[in-house]
Every structure is written in structure tokens, then in C-alpha cells.
Length: 461
Image (cartoon, rainbow, N blue to C red; front, side, top):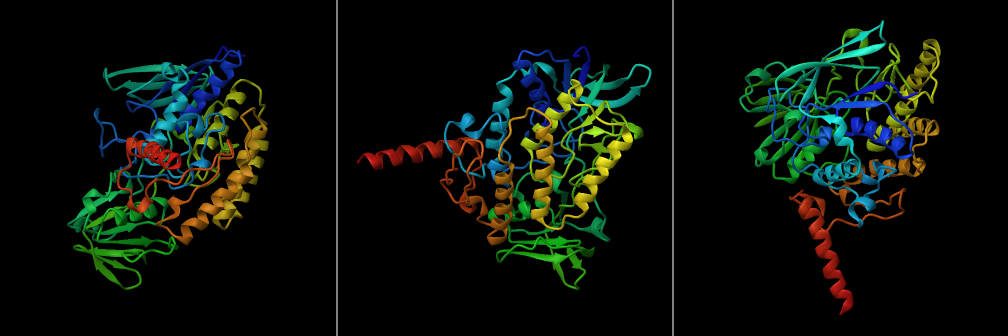
């Protein structure tokens, strides 16, 4: 049965995965429901849609993206590769395992450009409020068209929330920080290391953003980087110029005091303190309430909202896997909406959810986390026709990546891996990552071609 209507909020990797899942069904000659997708930015890509703006955008809306210049993938691309659209298919040649932001955006866009997905998306449109109309079994969604400055409403039988959860900063307070005379920002507003050249930088937090921003600032010429952790240090072997300290206790002027009794003067503070799951358009009874974890409570199979079976959330987990996990979730959501997957009563769903939550609670190491999410994706794939791939080999790559970072935090991006989709081994990037200061698509790809031409000349002669 396909005479129903699906609304998708967000055209980032999760929302695009949902569109792609329905398109896959359509290509097989099967009917699909009426679909509409709404994106508050002016282009698709979600976090990968880079903007130089911080704070608010062109139309006064809070900036969604936390993407910044000089960002390179912090995990092997072979771990996030789409099963139905490989890097070889897109680029027609091997590329390195750790591409920069523009290259990954080009890959995401390449897959979706093969479809007519843009026909389903209304850009510059923000969801303001959602009601569930019990008598009609429909969602009423209020939207603002930011360009036309008009408000309108739509009704949907199913609502898919693909807005991500890395856009609303968590901003802790430290005594005296309001009098700090230098730059203070959250990682959400970090747009590159340029302004921190020859500066002493304090990063508060021990997340991936602290690790990556710290290494980037070091690479691009900051004087020193100090990473202040709450509970556990990142714990890799830092080069001279990067150090870790316990949590800040307070500030006095431009001096930060740490819980180990030490202190240091800084030019800037970057709060790498994580993000909040925020859904201001959802009422309390429809709102997912969770911290960043591998298995949020109240989501059956990590997807279907347990309090309302017609509400679907994609990509709400903490993530090792990314693009391909969003795909497997979208394929499950598609088949569920099409009536191919029957979900049990709430009491049974609760048991299943609790099983996964207990399993996550038993994880201790990064290896455990990888295995947990691998098992989760295996289960989703077993329930749909999403193209299967060797998840155990991908898990091994993730574990190798964890080791690579411990071995050398500055050189792990120079490693290469082999695609489980194509069997193609990545090329080493033409320039060691620490020396590569240009992250443009042109530099990345043109230089690869230039190197191959030069090599062919050498072989000829």
C-alpha cells in the first residue's frame, strides 16, 4: 500500500539516505508514497554543506553546520563507503583513504545527483512545529519558507526526522570565563585555524572535535595547544606543543587554572564540549530525549519512536559508521513504512530496546564500541535488501584506525586501506598530511592526475 504521504525533515546524509531508499524501490518498478523533504539550508549535505558563517545565517536562522576549512576525514573513507555507490564509481581512480571535506561532499553529492532527489526537496524551509492528529493518524507540520517569508502547513502519515545532532552546542560554564579577554567559541563556530596562528589555544573537552581541532591548529602554526579533559584524557602520544591537562577549575583574566594546580595564559578558548539533541519543532510527547550514545532509549531498532510508531528518527546515534549506517536505517524505515516489516507491540519493543541498551552498557573499549555498532548494522541489513558487504572487515579497519591514531596522531591520515566494496586499495596522497595545507578538491584530484602522468612518462622512458 503506497497511498500515503511521507515528510522528511533534513536533507543531510540521513535525509538523503531516506530519499535514496525510496528511489531504490522505484527503480525496481515498484510504487512509492508521496514524499516531501524540507531543508533549512540552501543546499543538501547537512554538516558537509560548509558555510563560512557562524551564529545566524542569511535569513536569521541559527547556523546548522559545524564544518570548517582544512577538515580532512578523521576515519578511513573505506569505513563509510556506500554499498551501492563506491568511491571508484565516483572518482574513476583510486584516491587516498583520508580525503578532505570538499572531496567527501563531492562524493555524497555524486550519488544523489544520479537521482531526481532534488525534485522532492524544498530548500530554505524550516520546520517550526509538529502536532500529531490522533483522529486522522497524521502529523501536521508548520513550516516557514525563509525566502518568501511565508508560513504554511503540511500533513503527513509518516514523519522522518533526519536533522542530525551536531548543531546545538553544549556550553558549560567555568568561573571567571566571562572576563576572559581573548576569543571564546564553541567548536560549532570554529571555521579554521587561520586566526590562531602563533597563539596559545585552550581546548576544553576530550572529544573527536578537540582532537581534530587541536591537531589542525598545531599543523597550521598555533604556538601551543592545551586540551583540558573532564574525566579521561584522549591519551595519544602528543607531539611537543600539544599537552593534556585535567579540567579547568576557573579563569582569572587570560589565565586558566586547572584541577591539578597548574595554570597557563591563553589567547583563545575553544569549547569542544559536545552537542545536545535538540528538536525545537517537536512537542514533548514526540521529542527524542537522549545524550550522545550508541543506542538512544525509546527508539525501536534505533529508528522507530517507541511512543508513536509513525515517527522515525535517522542518524541519532553516536557514530563510528556514518553514511552506510544511515543507509541501512533508511532501508529499514522504508520497508517498515511500506508494510514489509511488522514491528511488535510496545511491550516487546521495550524488551528489544533494553537488550541493546544493556549491551552498550557492557562495552568498555573502542573495540567494543565498534563491535556493538557492527552488530547493530548487521541486524538491520538482515531485515532488508540493502546491499550486503563485509562488515567484519570494516570493523577490523576501524580497529586498525584506532591503533593508527595511538601510534602517531600526526601521521595516521597517511595510511591506506582497501575497499570491501571493490577490493581497490587506496593511493597514498601525493603530500604527507602534515605538509598538505590546501584542502581543495582541485588540488586533491588534479595533483593525483599530474602524478600519474609524470609516472607514466617515467615508465615510458
